[in-house]
Length: 527
Image: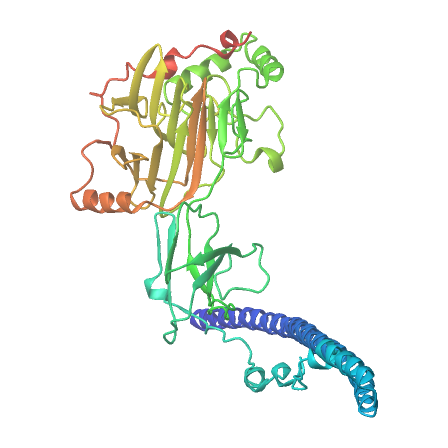
């Protein structure tokens, strides 16, 4: 019966997944269908605009060439008309002279004849008819203004839609997700020498299946990629997956998108749990900062009630210093919706926890202190850490501690024991937790130098823990375990563990440098 139920549950899960895929596919089809209509209307509009531009150019050319013909007609007509006028006038003068010469032939008086002959000779010499050229200044030929558009007609008849590159293919096997970088590789289905560049688009998502049409995130665009591979660097993996697609472009147009692919980008994402933080800590986004004025009025009221000669409070404080978790506070009401399942840290425990527990797997995050930070601790704790308990002083906390106040120290702490670390304090600390192997390691975040390793067996979920006094810390989560750390851990595990670890309480380890015993009270720091 149980096996049949299990089989049925698997079938139900398979059907549910298939139903989700079908819903997504139908949504994709509807979206594509709608976009076909929109894009079709757009390309028709673009086509009409191109033809209108072409018509406009032809009209302009026709008008210009017609104007040239008219100007040539006017020029020739003017030249010929002038010649015609001059020739007509010359002909009239020549006819008159001819008539006068014929009349002179009949003159009998010798003197009169000689005088007339001399006049005729002079007039002939000056006659316009003998000064005119008998060649027209313009011809009737207009062939130099004729056109032959046969070549242009061939060009127009050869008009086609722009050649569009084919859709690339993303090579999933060659894509790499490592060190908060994603390398995407693709190829063209056929060789295309006219491709000018590629456009890569990506978006973050928490949906594992095929990319959905509608998602919480918009596509980010990377243009002008000249190779068939691109690496996105410095990413924060604050989603479980990322979708990618790419399209090829030539000088004229962009082609279709490739089939989108989904790459897994899981990482440990968390922030500070402001509901757990000490009132003297100000939590904002990914940072926590010491605030001596924080909760001043409220803190003084609490302290007044707690210090009314209560032996119970004194006993609790002493228990906290000895490493025993203090009991949960039950006398103060709180809202589970805003306070969570634990009390806010108080007293000299300037602590804030992360808002996400670790129950399995390997995780990594980084913490960067302010340059003038006087004291801070970074590590892990169980969620039931008492509100007065200090990191490294109980058996349910593990941390490294930096002290720049009174005396400088850099130590690993657990269960009220400390081990000095003989390495420079890095500008940023990387924290690596392998829950299943019971391992907590600290690294120089810049060069991945191992600072210290704790070995233990976690008996319950753990949570990132931070202490800061007179300064501030900046948290960076959403990081993959760096490849250098993974490689180092494989080597260390192969050798049987780190020699620099504190795996259990060791009476030989001195705790004289425990910083928390030297912290002044909050009241002494307030004006």
